[in-house]
Image (tube, rainbow, N blue to C red; front, side, top):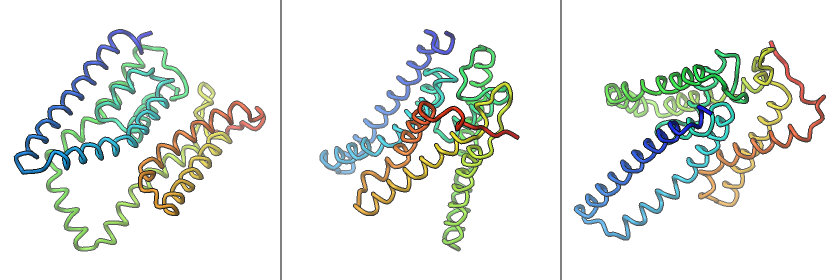
Length: 252
């Protein structure tokens, strides 16, 4: 199968080895610089340990995203994408946008190599622009944001929260009023998507309350990944055990 061919695995191995080598390079450079600054080995080991632990939570989200995209795109392409720059917000959105052009979704395996290549281009080209624009404009953007935050901190917080809420609202809206087609009915919203949405929200609320109630700081970074995985499990269970007549979808 072209999605999991030897070439794809070779590309994945090359990318991941490069990422690991880059990480080791900067780790060694940082360790040497720390020694020059007079930092103790114990302090630096503590920093490394805390950084490793802090990276576990995002890694769970990455694994969850690979699982989501694996059915349509195979395991290798999401693995490559998420080993470098990808995240669940961008990768799923870009993949869905490309798949929708072919009247498909992440719930349907891609069978055509040309469609697969087109999806790769969409996912790759879409994330290149930040790498080009940020080095050029980041400094001026940070100055303006810093000036706005210093002038009116409350407004800056509101704008930041509004941007995040808008992003989440787009995914929620798809679960409630997503449009399906005759060729791909599973892409439409329905009782299953709404129930999974409710389960994910409830899990997030419960985990957040637990963190606040029992001061579980270590759990805070895992609330979103655990909610995602719990929602996936709920989708599997609901699909398996709900009567077929309850799995209703609505389309527009």
